[in-house]
Image (cartoon, rainbow, N blue to C red):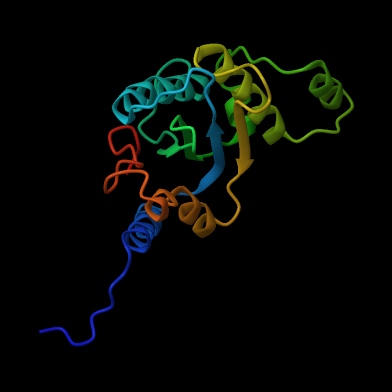
Length: 188
């Protein structure tokens, strides 16, 4: 019999487990992406189906031809707004930006402002990737709006804080058990 067992909440248990998966699999998340849809879902099952398409769009952006075995890993988390509509948080690894841009022929869409920064050598390659990925997502995911609030890509920062944030559904009882994690689409 165990003396004084430590009882953790489902949220803390899930966070600990996810952080352990990150450590064991040596995952280096670089981006925290939030997608807000103008044609949002209320059904988690339908959102899971949409997530398959979203993952394909992301992978096609980074790997337009064949997908390598050591491709980036992506985790999907669904969150319910107070309006009952769903939006999506994604934790995603990064790629070597110079290798990515120089390998294969690829079409990317960037603004004239970014192009001027590139010509003036006042840019970060990471900014080019995030802007091009934002434009790519808005082009190939029809339910996303075209405004600045539909796609928000940030550096992941403190991974423990991000994992805590994406598990906030446990505190509000928005989902049954672990419905907020899309296990099928996530590279867990």
